[in-house]
Image (cartoon, rainbow, N blue to C red; front, side, top):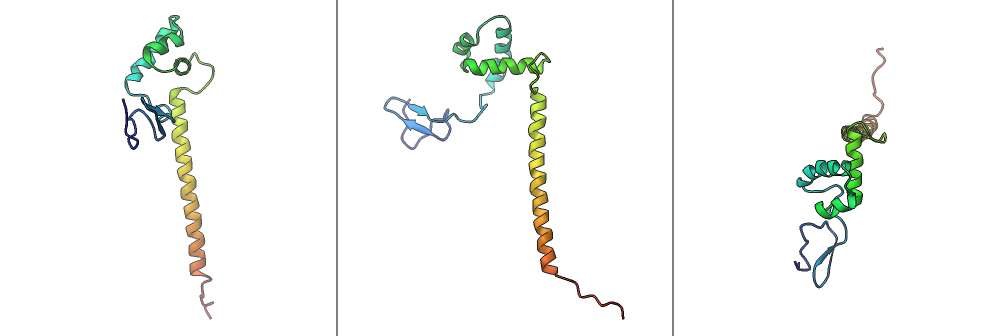
Length: 132
């Protein structure tokens, strides 16, 4: 399929290099951006590897690279408690959520510190009488 020089093929991210015959993705779209149909393939592929099939063979059948399939199998083993000690999917999601929350709290603290400093300079020393 040919694309005009201003069109971006839907399967590509921002960087697309045009050739005479087809469009070539210079950069992958986004990390981990597989369509929802791969969720079922994830389970199928993990089962197939456990029964003895090779990731390269499954790569030709399902589409993702053999390396990606190996990572899926490794993650499935972690989620099932048989892994190599890495983070399970639930732990990884929690870590991502906590990092995001931590980043937000740091930003809020920085904003409050700047606001407090600004109010301290605006109000200046108070001129209260000493009650004489």
